Amino acid sequence: QVQLVGSGGGSVQSGGSLRLSCAATGNMYSNIPMAWFRQAPGEGREGVAAINRDGGTVYADSVKGRFTISRDYAKNTVYLQMNSLKPEDTAMYYCAAARGISYWWLTLEQSNYDSWGQGTQVTVSS
Image (tube, rainbow, N blue to C red):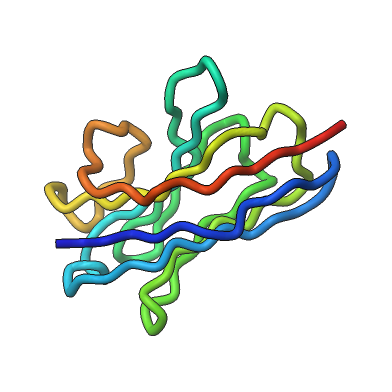
């Protein structure tokens, strides 16, 4: 079983940066795709970025060129570096792990992810 603990959220001004971290426990961590999702008030949850076992990545169009997902196998941690933040990036951010799909799969479809962190709030002011 994979357990995920997200951290690193906060409040920044437009144009600022934050780095989110997701610490994973469980021996499957290194072999499974991981992702970040976000949910703004009154909105549905949307995929932001995903990374597979081999470091392949995929991003939502809204964050391409601004966000970078990465993983540190030694620390069992996935990161989301967020630069040039905009007010519309304000949301609760969740990390997630997909135990039931192939290691090489890259997807932002939340139905593929079955382990979720507790969420960390990101607020961007204009």
